[in-house]
Image (tube, rainbow, N blue to C red):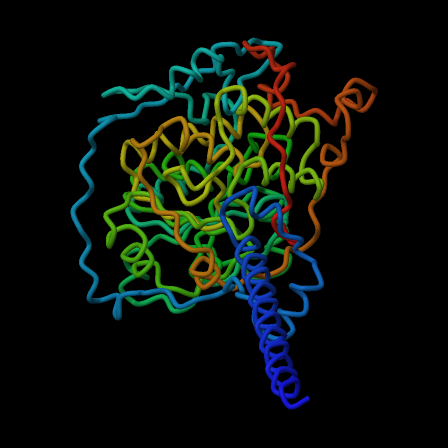
Length: 461
């Protein structure tokens, strides 16, 4: 009996140790699983992100406890201290191409079929435009008699503009917002040009007082209103792409431009923007990365879900890109993302940047007006020749204050679910001056093309 008591004591202690070790191992396994769950949810690797259930109870619980990493909406921008201290560098020398000129006559125009603003670009011309040469001539809008006309007084005014902050309002969709924190130096250096159509100009006149100078120029605060008559497209959203994507065609003397969507109020001095996003890193083009999407196929899926354009036409657009070798984004790519937030674009107007803008515009003209899909494709086609800065989304949100649109924009084409709907009596569904590449026989077999599977990466995306 005396020997059994110590044995029982030893066994009891051993069992307790075993129980404690098992509990510790079990807790470590749970913590490892939680860590993997969190890591996979924020991983840039597609199949790992797909393992994550974004609305899982685990994430909700951890979020409540403040243990999940959050994507910053706004963050400090490492700006220079003083606009007056910024040194404007010499222009970036052109390498390849050395010069870019533009096709100005729509070859297929007839008496029955007037010229189109973007022209009738042939598939062979499109393919040739991606091959870099010392001297290049490409389509870039503004075909003779194709629309998009400026008043003579505005043409004369913009010729003096070397540094431009540009914005645009079409179809009375927005109201101009005055930039703030603009230094005296930038007020003298920059032209602030708000491009509007006649409908938007009338809307603005009804709501605010516009000042007219002795030359006939129209002003609203710091903004010079530049009216674009004879809108190039049926779709207002396409019209807005003209000043956004090819500002060098509207303002041919400009050396630098900063584009800002019409619903935004700029809150950072434009000279500091050029220093931060171009000159500091020796870039000629800068744009923010998208908050949620990195692959154009993710972006296309979101466009369809949100009914931002006809679903079958978005699919056709993406199938053409897939056929032409556009892969979904992955960490192996040289860019941090294929999808930008295009509401802020910073440029030096070099030959290569102008070419990129033209090629991007031609894709928007040829296919859907969803320029975030086309951007990544043109980057892919130009390859390493086009080096640009894709800056963090949180900095993008620190450049402006976002205001609401005057109204919700909607057009019938956004609700189309099948190509058959374009064949009925509702002929107004099909745009007559844009997106013609979606209705022109494509020189390749798209029947076997399957779009890559898409995992929704964010409830908001």
